Image (cartoon, rainbow, N blue to C red; front, side, top):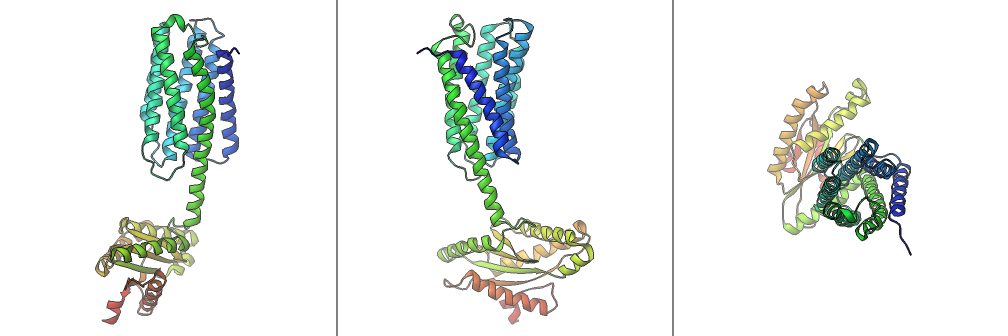
Length: 387
């Protein structure tokens, strides 16, 4: 059975166009990662349309040069956009500078050296291989968020593309008579066309799986997070709190719980409106994080009440945390809100191996209630209450 390279490349281009349209249709409302993936696939599809169209122009003419150069730009910049999407899906910053710079250098060099066929084929395929290697290397780095097996699928696809693209570069540069154009029926060109069709499908599956992973993480975040402040909600905080307490028992480390209630919060809502109240809650959580470090587990316990579990902290450490928070709020409240923020709180220390989060909450709540009765704007623990 005869397999025609041109037909395979046309089929691959149609698959890319279909993939670009499908991603727009099935992803719905998307964030930056998905938009970059959509743009990447769209640009690569456009690049191949232009490259196939250049074959209809007079060889070496201005139309051939223009269409071929734009095609290289579309394919290379599209790959750089995909690299940004992969980084974002792995929890990293959107920084694919090296692939993008490589794309621009490749396009400019291709246009300048267009009249030398061996050079332009070797230059384009060589730098595309380098670009693919950069993206593959980024996928090999440890993700910053939990991800599924989609990155290995994409990695395998990139490695296959690297191999066949490098082969075409070598063929066009050193064996030009066997590779007069990209439709030439050489085994390396045929292998490239077959691999391109397979990797398009693999890339489509990988991108959709990556998008699904991100959607699942977003749903988990929504289920565990308070929508106003961004802190954990009570359910998620309790789940993690039980684990932290169990670890504290096992490692015989200190652990303290502080239950906090913003004073006169109703006055802020009544005087300045509920939007100001929401900003006050957000600022309060910001302060709890700013003065506490990474070892704190913070939640919006309900209304204007918040709870914090401080790992590895004894009574002295959480008292110091309390003082830092009060100083931070005294400075930030008037500056950010135009109103002072203060709070009442109760502190409970873990007692023994049988203590529970619920028991600590009950003790902290009783101390918080006493702090309110004693005039508010104070923090009580069992030692200070007994003084």
